[in-house]
Image (tube, rainbow, N blue to C red; front, side):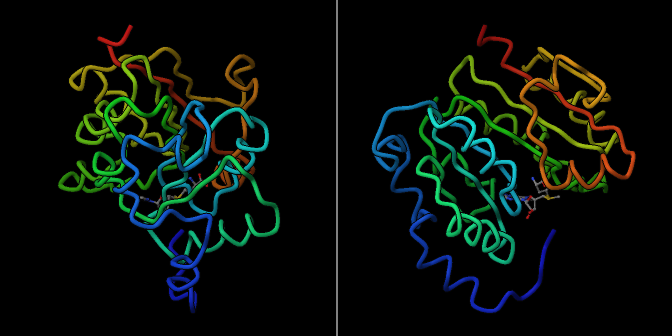
Amino acid sequence: MRLKNVPGSREAIAESRFVIQNPQEHAGKWNEVFGRTAPLHIEIGMGKGRFLMEMAALHPDINYIGIEKYSSVLIRAIQKMEENELANVRFIRMDAEELTEVFGAGEADRIYLNFSDPWPKDRHAKRRLPSRQFLARYAQILKPEGTIEFKTDNRPLFDFALEELEPAGWEAEAVTFDLHADEGLMQGNVMTEYEARFSAAGNPICKYIIHRRDGH
Ligand code: SAM
């Protein structure tokens, strides 16, 4: 998804009122940024923001934050927001490795991971967003009963993600290897950009919903 060299994207992001600059300053106080107290849902690696913005339009009672590492991708989400502004959405340009500096303990209610980069080499396993190293970060910023929802068409990545749950202290409350054939889990499903592309190509979509074992 990395689009190289979108001219001026860094400057546009620095000036955008939809992007929170110096997000560490808001750790533990994200309700203030939104000007109201509401559940906080975070999408990590949101790409161009299709899923996040559709979810935000459908659920105006939730505060949404979209995190994206690359300016060249984030700029596309900002352009969409300029056309159709949503009061309950903010963006942060950052690497998810810094999550615990940006959110307070137990501040978030839900995290979405959609079509995360697979990092197929073994030595890069800890960079995968559903890895045990990332699950430990999510555990810090989520409420004890908070949930993570992960979708991907990459079966090896999904199998890896399932294997990480037990050692990391999480358990699944829902798992499917073919989301679009699962009537229950499809209720309220909002397609991501990658989901639309890969399901149109005939790839089954895997999904889990997980919570901490000690949170319930
Ligand atoms: N979620 C979107 C979708 O489903 O259409 C985009 C999927 S794309 C394959 C993965 C996105 O995650 C890319 O835009 C990438 O830059 C971003 N990303 C990957 N690792 C990240 C990290 N550590 N922190 C923040 N964003 C990350």
